[in-house]
View 1: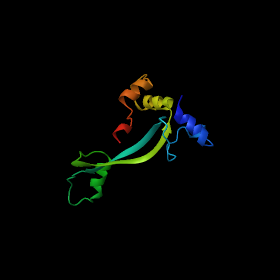
View 2 (view 1 turned 90 degrees about the horizontal axis):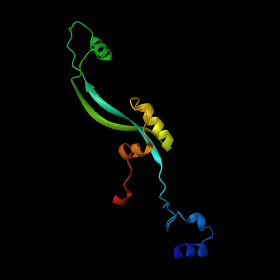
View 3 (view 1 turned 135 degrees about the horizontal axis):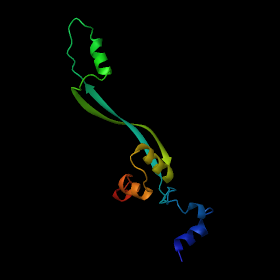
View 4 (view 1 turned 135 degrees about the vertical axis):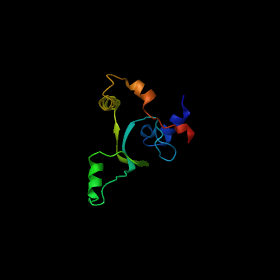
Length: 124
């Protein structure tokens, strides 16, 4: 017999509804969900363009815009989060296959093992 549940049943009005609540009302369920976090990366790129002094400097801008110049240097400025949402396992697999069109089929189990980061709550 689980005496903790018995005591909860005897002392609480909504005891069965509070089974997944901690002492102070916090959610202590072990249910997990998948959260898709979308980001974009930002780089500062530099190009060094040599041109005639008589030409407007906008020609250098056109050279870069037309992707005719090699980069001089770059600096990674980080990732910014653009959106997030909860997704299902099925949606996760579908999204992976759409984003990685070189893969024909993959299981959720394999994705979980290799591509999904699980928060380690034991470290806290």
